[in-house]
Length: 446
Image (tube, rainbow, N blue to C red; front, side, top):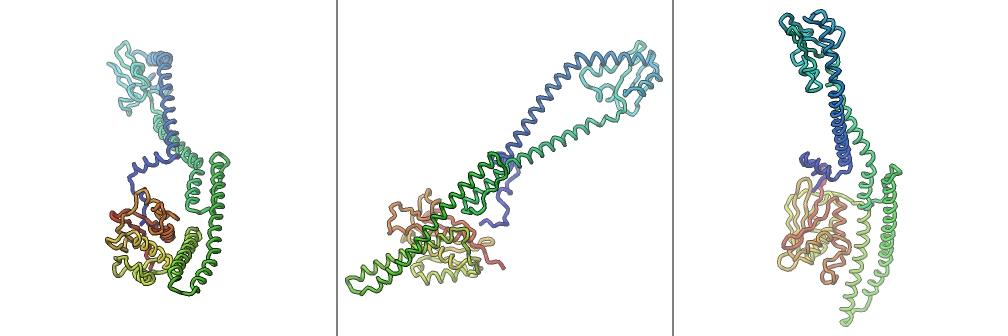
C-alpha cells in the first residue's frame, strides 16, 4: 500500500538513472540539452576558425612587425647595454628587461620568475621566445617580457566571468523552455483529471498558440464527454427508479396469489426472478452513487471480525468461506455498509467460482499502517488477459453469459468502486490454483 507520506519510488533511484529517465521522457530536458549541444558546437567552430585566422595573421603580419619593434628597442638600449636606458624603457613601456652578459647583469623586475622572460606569459606563438630575445655584438643577451601589469589577472577574471555568463544563459534558456512548455504540464494534469471523471475544472489556457489551441480542443472534448456521461447516468437512474415501482407491485401481486401444489413452483420461480431484478436495480443505483466524484463515505471505526460475523449471519451462504483473521486486530477507518457490500460480493464470487475441492479463504493481516484484506478461491482462475478487465461494469469471463456461471457482472464492479472510494485499488491475480483479490484499508487514527 502506498501512503501519501511515503517517499516516491522515483526519488529512491540513483541520480544517474533519474537523469537518464528525464532525458528520455522529458521534452523540456531534451530541448535544453539540444540547446547546450548547439551552443557548444557553434562555439567550437567559432574558436577553431578564429584560431586559424589569428595564426595566419600572426605569421604574415604581426610577427614581422613585432620582430622589427624588438630590434628597435634593443638598439635603443645600446651596445654595451645601458642600464639607465633599459630602466627608462621599462618606465615608458609596459615591458620588462633582462640583461645577461660579461659586463652587465641586470633585471628590471627581480621579483618575477624565469617563466615571465619570454617563455610563459608572453607566448602567443611558438616563435615568440625567439622574437623577444636578442644577442648583441659584445656578447650580451637581452630578453624582453611583460612588466607588472594590472591586467595580468584579467584573463582569469575574464574566464570566470565567461563561465558565469554561460551558466546564466543556460539558466535563462531552461526557464524560458520551462515557461514555453508549461501548457504541456497543464494539459497532462487536465487529461489525468478527466480520466478520473473530474470534469469540473477545465484545463487553464495560458496562451493563444498551438498548445493553447490544443488545450481548448481537449476542454471541448471533455465537455462533450461529460455531457454524454451525464446523459447516460441520468437515463440509467431514471430507468432504475421507474422500474422499482412496477417490480414492487408485481412482487406483491405474486405473493397474494393463492398457494396450491400446481402453482407453488411457478410462484417461487417468479419471486426469485423478481428478487434478482430488484437486486440488479439496487446494484445499478449503488454503482452510480459510487462512481461519481460526489460519492461520500460515512467513515467510522470498524471491527473487521465483528463485521464479517454479522455478514455471515445475515447471509448464511457465506459461511462456506474459511476465515483467517487474527485476534486483536485494530479497527479500520471505513464505511461499514459499503465495506460489507464489497466483502459480500468478493466472498460470493469466490464461492461461485471456487470449485468444490477446498473452500475459499478470507484472510486479513496487519501491514504497516494499514490492514490488508485477501479473498482467495481454489477454482480454475481466469486467463491472464482477463485480469485487467475484472471489476469492469457488466464484464463476464463467460462470453456466453449463462446465468449458471455468474451474475450480470456488477458484483466485482461494486467491490472495486467501494475499495477505490476508501483510497486503495482492488488487485486481482491468479494464485495457481484459484483467483485472489486483494486491497488495503487504513487504520482508524488515534
